Image (tube, rainbow, N blue to C red; front, side, top):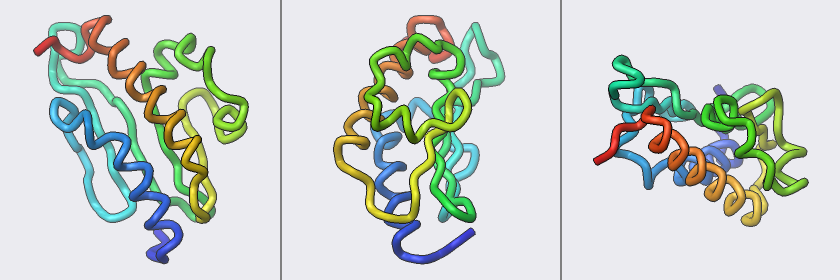
Length: 127
């Protein structure tokens, strides 16, 4: 894992998106360059379920958001700029440069919508 300042800055910018949801989301891994979050146990998912992650890789920082995989319609309103960053069905990759603040806002909206959808479907238990 690279430990240089640009990748750490991108990592930090992305992990802040998840801060609002901790708790109830539980960190399975929370170390420099690697954050992995899952839902708490619920009637639908007694062992919890993968929600998302941020990880520094060799060439980019990845932001994973499982609600987009489980509920693909969440991506319907995604900006073209954010869609360009998408790899696969639920991963967004960012280079080790600074992130456009508009992309952070897009990811915040998408994460909020994903969190709400997981509450609606029972993956995240109601408070």
